[in-house]
Image (cartoon, rainbow, N blue to C red; front, side, top):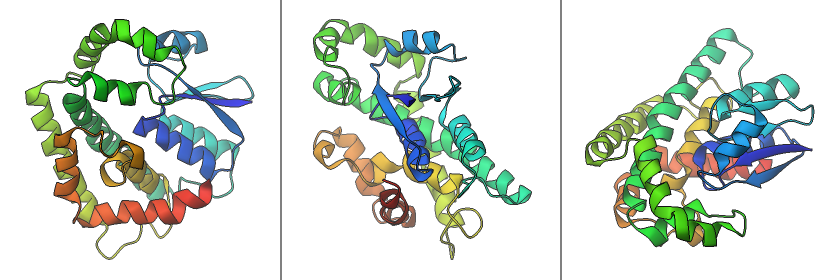
Length: 246
């Protein structure tokens, strides 16, 4: 059985889940705990200690969402997420790489900058759909884990301000690209649209049961962007593309 090793709340993992569902792949998910996931990655013999990691039914392990999309396009040729046209394929990959860095990384840093200082809030997301032993274990190790996450993601007031600026620049670029267009690249849904919408999910369409748990500054950020074109576009694409993949 194909297995996706993930953090349930991660927007990078949502990218991988969406691609798997879009391809109609038969897979199961394995929810990991931050910190403890390193041992799993080492056991899977992947190059880095990040998720998502897809363990395919042929025994191969593919790490990171972009590589997983590449793998799925190669394995399931129907309805490709990467355009056949070389120029459009290059453009879609460039958009995805840009969005991973300027939206995925920055939004994650902003979220945890506001969430990690609030123990209950942070644990709500870090333990989401994780194994049963997570809560008693994290009751003991959370301070150490929090410090490690802050160091690993270089989270501080200065980097948070920089992340907010970079995010603003990125969504402005998305808004500009979507003028008189339905999709970011070409005339059909591609990995560029999937990346944009998956990475912006928590900003544009927060999970309902978490809406009141989001840190107040993050909810203010949602309100700041609510009237911008990309915000409605993300929700529309989720409704028209994501739902039919499930």
